[in-house]
Length: 145
Image (cartoon, rainbow, N blue to C red; front, side, top):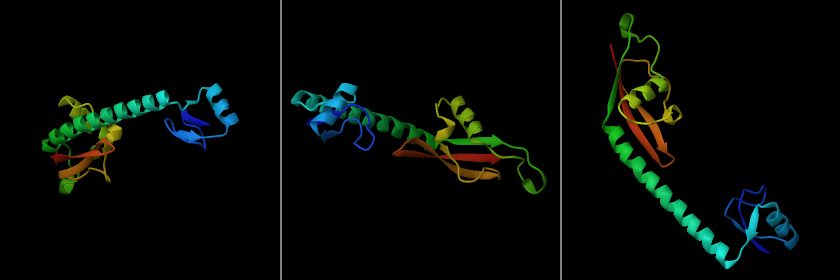
């Protein structure tokens, strides 16, 4: 029996997979609402849904690429307190970066900001902002006295 999974099924497959299973197990999955019979109509519907998801993903990536171009032109400056020998008190956190970006009109979550180490010295620092799995923007941050 050929079925199409409507949900992820442990040790069988993911949503949208077409599987060949024994009749009894296929009937069990269909009755449970986790699969449908793989008829020509349901296969065509699955293909249309996959194509729509692909188009939405491409549109999202394109939008993220545009944001990336804008972010990479941007430099964010922070004024920090320094002590002897220009040592910075504390460091700049992702939360502070998000607040500064919100002020400039960007909606970015602090989980998207990837910082190697800490930003705790004067000068310029580059950080990564993961807008999408396939789109990572480089943002310049400057710490001033």
